[in-house]
Image (tube, rainbow, N blue to C red; front, side):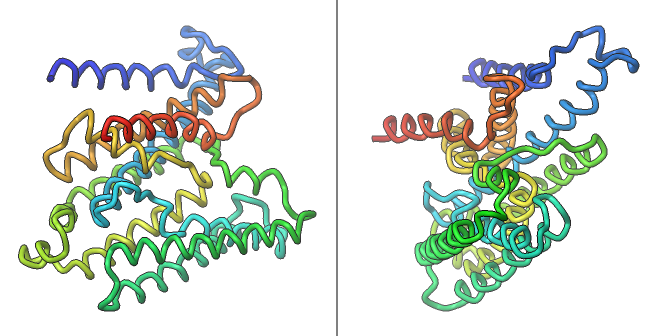
Length: 319
C-alpha cells in the first residue's frame, strides 16, 4: 500500500512538472536559464505564475468540497452548491451591463462580492433558525442557485448587446494570466486558507458524526456550521471573481481521495484533497492549452469532461 501511495504521488508531481511545458509556443530547457531568451520570459513570466494560480484554485476548491461534504454529511456537496458562485456571476454581469465595467475590474469584483455577501447574510439568518437542518440548508442553497441563475440568464437575454466574450467565459471557468508577484501571493494565501481549515478541523470531525453527537462532544452544530459557511463562502466568492465557475473539482476530488488515500481524519482529507485538487486543475489547464493551440479551451469544460466520467466510475464502484 505504501508503494502504491508513493507511486501515485510521484506520478502526480511528474504530471504537474510537465504542465509549464505545454502550450502553443515551444520552449527549450537551455532557454529557461537565459534571461535574454524568449523561452525564459514565457516560462518564468507566464507559465510558472499560471501554474501557481491553478495549483491554488484547484487546492482551494477541492478542500472546500471535502469540508462541505463532511459538514452536511452529503457526498454531493461542492463549493458552488450554496449559490455563492451564481451571486458573484450575477453581480459581475450587472456591473458589465449597466455600468460598462469589464470582467476582472475592481468594480465588477465589488459588485460580485457584494451580492455574494447579501446571500451569505440570508444564509446565516436561515441557518440560525431552529428548523435549519443540514438538508434544509442545502435546499436553501439550491433554491438560491435557481433564482439567481434565472435572473442571470434573464439579464443576459435582455441585454444581449452588453454581453461580451469575457462574461461568457466565466460560465465555463477560465484561468487568468497574472504576474509572478500576484501569483505567489495567491498561492501563499491558498496555503494559509488550508492551514486555517486544518487548524479548526475538529468541529468538522464532530459534525461528520451528526449534530446530536457533535453536541455531546462540546461542539455547537449551528455556530460551527455558520462559521465555516461564512469563511468558505467568502473564499468561494473570491475564487469565482478570479476564475469563474470551475466544475467537478470540489465534487469529485474528495471522493477520489477517500478511495485512494483512505484518510483517517479530517485533517488528512483536507490536505490530500488540496494536493489532488491542485494536481487535477493544473493538468486540466495544461490539456486546455495543448488540444488546439493557440486556442485555449475553458478549463471548466476540461474539468467537467474529465471529472464527469470519474464521478460516474466512483458511483459505479460504490454500487
